[in-house]
Amino acid sequence: MTATLDDLKTLAGRSLGIPVRLRERLPGGGSERAFHRLEAAGRPAIGVIGANLAEVRAFLGFTRHFAAQGIPVPRILGEAAAQGLYLMEDLGEATLAQRLRAWHAEPDGAAQARAALEAVVRWLPAIQVRGGAGLDDALCWEGRELAGAAFARDLERFLTQYVPRFVLHPVPVDAAVRADLDALIARLDALPREHFCYRDFQTRNVMWVAREDGVEGPVFLDYQSGRRGPLAYDLASLLYSPDTGADEPLRVHLTDVYLAALAEQGVACGREDFLSGFWPIVLIRRLQALGRYGELIAIRKQTAFLEKIPPALAELRALQAAGRFAFGLPALEAWLARVLAG
Image (cartoon, rainbow, N blue to C red; front, side, top):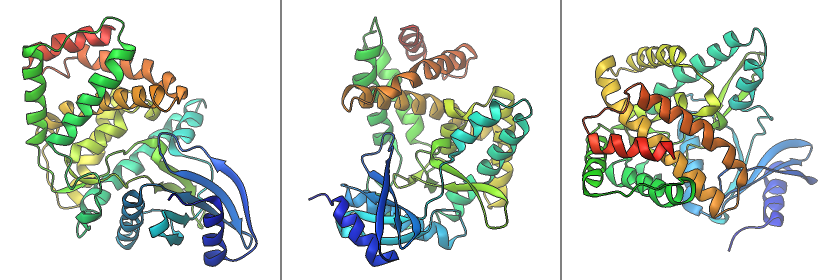
């Protein structure tokens, strides 16, 4: 049985003190968890009710592990994992996505946006390598590795949840296209996956917080779907998310920042080798996002995700026009061009 608001209030009173006051329910995006801003004994907190107990255990376990590695994550203020409940510090209102939009609207905000993205990208290898070392893989509730089967599911979601609903003239997946799709999945499955993959590393899952010394910086959230996976996956997720607002020169620069930070974590990776796996990941990640948008819109009636589809399509068209998806899979390239033309 899913926990209730009364259960959450009981946890808050036991962990932080009384009285407990629920202030507001917060939007959860695509999450099935319920988030509530509250006060207990005058202390602010975010209370979370999760129906998926394995997901809750993953978030709590990963958070403890990352905090021990010096990675900026929320402080856990109380938990009742068996009920799917936990309390974490209230980090305020400002996600990195929101701050980026504000900076991009300012005449001199580009430098601030660039510096913030550089800071986040420098943290990513620490999360993947240092955070991945010693992590309890048994907590990875959606599978211990982001491998071929997971990529195949992402592709199938695109084919079943997005294409029939949002492509005006759907293009059949014939035998040649299917063979190329299988070859793409096999290529992705062959990528090394010894380090932690955040899985949903994007600006809406990063809070931008002023620390006690007044310096602003990132605090990371929503890594509970993480598992072992290709290093390039998280960088591709960030750089090609529409919320990031990065142009191609900035993406090239941030890739260099990432590779330098990765080397500081003891993992040497040549740029060309990295990019050979990066572009197939960009494609599957963006198709996965479109499939997820279609699912959220059609099944959960979250129509706000409709506005995310046009920029995602525009980005995919531009990348294909630039030859980024030329993987030696001609049937796939032709099929994708017709699907994106819609």
